[in-house]
Length: 132
Image 1 (cartoon, rainbow, N blue to C red):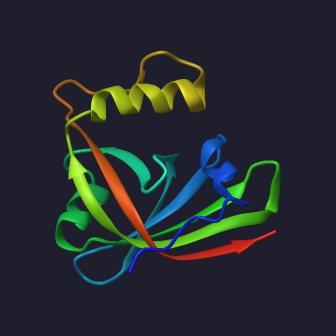
Image 2 (cartoon, rainbow, N blue to C red):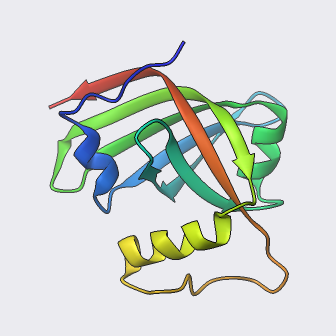
C-alpha cells in the first residue's frame, strides 16, 4: 500500500539532505549507509553501483527504510519505510550526474570507477513518518 510524502516535508527531499538508507543483509542484519536522495513526485530515488552491498541486498530483499533530517533543522525529519519498485541501469548515469550537481556543484560525478555500472533505485513509500 502506497503512502504519500506530505507536502509539508517534500522540501527535505529537494535539499542537499543525506539519507540514512537501510537495507537487509542476507543474514537478516540491517545495513545502513548515508546516500544522496532525489524525488520524482512518486518515488524516492537512490543511485548506487552494481555489486555494492546495497545492490546485492536489494536484489534479495526489496524492503528499505530511510531517515532524512532537514539540514537546516535536524529536529525536522522524514522517515520512510517502503519497497523497491524498480532497479534500472537506464538513466542511472545521467541521474548520478544530476546528484553530483545537487550535492557537490559538479556537472559530472567525479568518483566513477572504471567499468562501473550505475543503478537507479526507485522506492515506493509504504509508511511515512514526519516530525517538525
